[in-house]
Image (tube, rainbow, N blue to C red):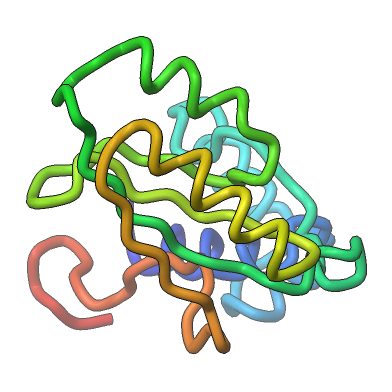
Length: 151
């Protein structure tokens, strides 16, 4: 994995539908070289798929939030299985630290958010933060390449 691979990953996160020619211009390589690198990244499992970016507000879900949950019973697999069934949750991560789980959710209204918080509270203590804006979305960390910390 070198700086070109990381730049390609970054460009693909920005636009997963970019052509090899567009990607080549962004990373200053030829289109065939880009195609070969992307194929290698896919074959090695670095690129695991492609997905669309979705504007939740345009789906009628303008309120996005981050929910931290400390489970009543740590490591309770049934709780994780039940959380998966909550449709408003867009991400759910088991983590170290005080909360056991950190989730992201999208809802259409404050009453729907209140209902979601009440439903999640049945699993343990939760703390909810509403997302006002996002300074960083998904990106590839470009700071440390091959251990030298430089591009």
